[in-house]
Each structure stands twice: as structure tokens, then as C-alpha cells.
Image 1 (cartoon, one colour):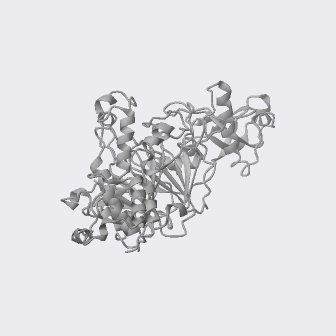
Image 2 (cartoon, rainbow, N blue to C red; image 1 turned 60 degrees about the horizontal axis):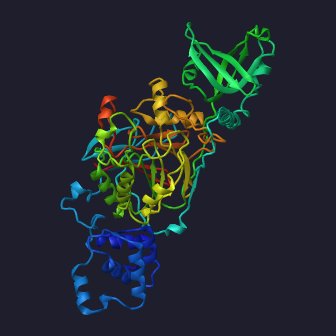
Image 3 (cartoon, rainbow, N blue to C red; image 1 turned 60 degrees about the vertical axis):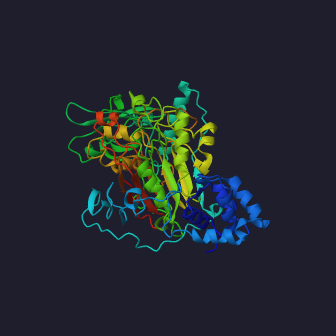
Length: 564
């Protein structure tokens, strides 16, 4: 079979028990005779080395093109013939699994379907099964399941240089921590999100509203500086703009009251209503008739790829924890080498590559690797098991060795060097990644804890993280409330605002699997690769382990696979 593409080079190496560095694949694919170059590279590779280095590939190409190849003699050819590639590719470590079921040699269970554009968090036709037993059923009544392999799959044969990918959102920290820096970031938040609301209401600044005649209709756009229930059961809201503050009241018998209870400190909203009769006396209040959120338009139409291509969205690997599941990770990596995964060209990792050090009390007792740099070295080794021709994009999380305050800058040069084997693209948390024309907002998800703690259960729970994600889209900000569990870094601008609507919103952090659609935006909270820790037991969190959401970028259909 001709080997003019990187994908075919990777597959040929995998059949012989080898993985390869990305640059090594490119070098071999560009050889005049890739088949001979591969044979020479394998001969030049040191014994028991599962990952083919770039230097071996370059030497092999030079040797093959100069005619120096031991495969030209009859004995060498006979030896190669007797060890022809197995039609069932071996795993990337070079050892063939004895039991395909346990090692991941068989195709892991899956179901596939598409998400509708209905209520927040709803997804139809997406369930997860193992051996015919339903593990997780997030579907609504009437959902349908299609058989695995129904779609014709194409080879992962587009050269990496030709792939359509753009990463935006990386930052260089400029904040000094001064009071003025915090004022600057909140003013920037206000201006950006107020811009989404000004065309929908006829608003006035708070100081101008306070001078209006009582009984007049009015609207205010502001940041929620306070929200509380009154003794009578009504909801009182203080809105702040750049001119001052103004009180609003949502009566308990209005349908609007439920929506008012969704409000969080520091989010930006517009409130329309009628001023109290004593407004001009300085004691006025705005009786709310409507609340407007920056929100995603209900008519939003997501972009899709112009060819059949897929992306795997994962997070929370936690290498270094004694609860890290290398068996699940290896099954996932092995599957990526199979024909079924030929269309999976992108791997998006939403933070927490490693377990970290000192993240929570007693963590030292739960570490398998106690040195943070050794944790990243171990993670890099696991990343090498991913096919060399895949594009990998990573952002940090709260367990990673970056600052905790958000936005989190990308990994420093020392950590980038440790994780350089796969030539991954590394950006800040959050970042927007555009692959094949499909925009993916990647955010690790620390704010989900805060939303779940503050909002009523009907709006946010750990069992349905997609509902909390819908709230973030509605508020057009990935971390609205300042303080509590959310640390905010004062920068020149608020990088946490969702200025452009994404086609896919991808989070992690809470170790739960959840997916749905909100105003046609596909929301995915990927699971984790770590079993329950003692700390998680203490807070009664049962993680979902070893799931990999796979998105068809040309249709935004979602397939959930489990690798336990």
C-alpha cells in the first residue's frame, strides 16, 4: 500500500508495534520511498523503543535514498516476509494484547445520536451502554440510537500542515493586583456585555433614572451588585453601572421571580419595568417587568466542517494520582489507532493533565508521583501513545502548575519542553479553538462548582453539568461571580467574557459526564481518567471515569465512548 500520507505511515508503524514523534512521521511521509524509509527506521531504532525518534527517521530517509538498505539482500527480505504486519494492529507499546476484551483491542461500546436545540441540557438519542447494559441515559423520551459504524469513515490522511485549525485566547499577564486593575477588568466586562443588551432595551444610566418622574417606564443595564429575597418573598436586585447603583424589585407572584433567582453577583443584565411613584424624591425603585440576559440568540446557527472529520473532547487525566486509570487511558489510545477512529483528527484536552501537588488537604497521601515535574514527564509518556498524526490542543486546569486565578495563562516554557513530544498546541484557560471551521470554547470549569452551590437544583446540579453550562452561555461569561471558589486575575480586559458564540462549549473539572444543547450550541462536560479519591468520597462525589465524547464536526453529532 502506498504510504504518501502521514496517517498511513502511522498505521504501518503501529502494525509493527511502533509509535512515532510527529516530526518523525512527517519526515518518513516525505521520503521518496516511504516503505523503504520505514523499514530502515525500524532497523535503526534501539531495541525495546516503542516511540520512533525524529533522528532515526532522518537517518532512515538518508539511508533509503542513498540505496543503503539491508532489506536489499535475500535473507533480510525473507525475514521481513515471515513477520508480515498483523491485520489486527498491536497496541502502541509494541506488545500485542493477550486478551483483546481487557486491553481495549475490541471496539469499546458506543451509541450515537444528535442533540436538538430545545431546552437547556436536553440531548436526544445519546446513551451509553456496556455489554447491552445502560450505564448512563441522558436522552429524552423519543430519542433514537443508531448502530456503531453506520457512517462511512475516511482515513486520517490530511497532512497536518493542511488542517484548518486556529487557537485564540492565550494571554500574557499584565495585572499588578492594584485596586485600579480590578476596576479596569470589571469596567471591561460591563462594556462588553452591555453592548449585547443596548439594542434590546431603551436604557438610561442609573443617575438619570433616579431623576425620572414616578410611574415612568424605564430600563437599566447594570452589573448585579446584590440580589436577595425580602421578608415578603420578593427578590430585590441592586444594579450598578459606571454612574452609580439603582434598586429593582421582582414581585414574588410574577413568573419573572424564578428567573430572578438565577441571578449571580457580578453578572450583567438589563431590567425593564415601571418606576415607583416616589422615584423623583430619591427613594425610588424599579418594579421589574422583564429581565434580559446577554444570552445566545435562539436562532443561532452553528458552523460545521466541510468534510467528515471528528474530534475527541476529554479532560481531567490526573497523571500522578494513585487513582489515575492508565488501563482506561491505554484502551482509549489503542482505539485511536484503529480503523474506527480514522476520522478522529483532533484531541482537545480541557485541563488537569496531572494531579498536581498541594491542591487540597491530604493530597500528598494520594499521590503516586510526588514531584510535579515527574508528573508532567509521565503525562508526556502517556500522550505519546496517541497517534502521531493527531492534532492535540491543551489548556490548563486548577490542578496544573499554573496560577489558580483565571484566566490561567498557558504552561510555561519548562513545562512545554517536557510535553513537547507530541508537539501539542497549548493555550490559556479559557481559549477558543476553531477546527475545520467549528469553534470550540474550551474552559476547565472551576466556576461550575460555584454555580451548582448558588443556584437552585432545577438550574444546576453535579449530575447534570450541562445545565450549569447553559447558565454560563446565557450570562455570556464563564465565571460571573467574583470571590468564593473563583479567583479572578485583574488583567487589562476581562478574558472570561464569551464575546463570540461558540459552536461547541467544552468543560471538565467536576469529573461528571454531561452533554446537551443550548440554543443550538453543543455543550459537553467530559468525564475524567481518575477513580474516586478519598477527598471525593468526603464530599460524596462519584466520578464518571473513562468516557470520551467524540464529535462529528461535519454534523455536530455526538458519540459517547467508554473505555473502562
